[in-house]
Image (cartoon, rainbow, N blue to C red):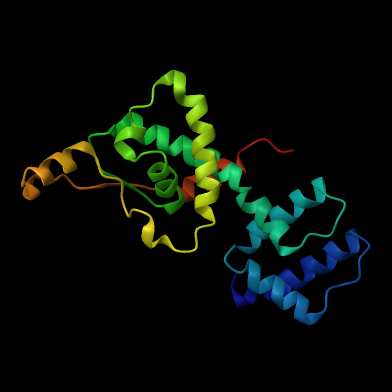
Length: 191
């Protein structure tokens, strides 16, 4: 949100408090809500508030609005799983890849790395999905990303680097998931 969204935001919170039969938030509480939610547009926050009104009898805290906007860690992991499977089918274990979500790198690294991950059979997928989700959720909580690989090394890069052919290493494929993730979560079933 931008600073000129503050007044409409205050009005929305006032209506929200009325809808829940709660006293209106103090000026400091309102500023705190605004600051915490400022990375989202007023329209996104407004839609999340409406969704929260449909599902909960309690006045939302900023974390409730963010959870409605972004989903749970498990929701994000499921969307990430989709992107990883798509990358495996498109690029396989030969190409090096870099996802825009470091939690994906964390999960794949804890499952043996990109090349091993790409060798998973179809029969193993349901079990590996559970492992991926577990590692992804844990990966989102990592405070220090220094130990997480910046990209996932494919077979061609590894073989060429080991053979001394560093000039024959193909470019790493960048895989964007963040914008697509929000669209997928927005279009999901409403509960």
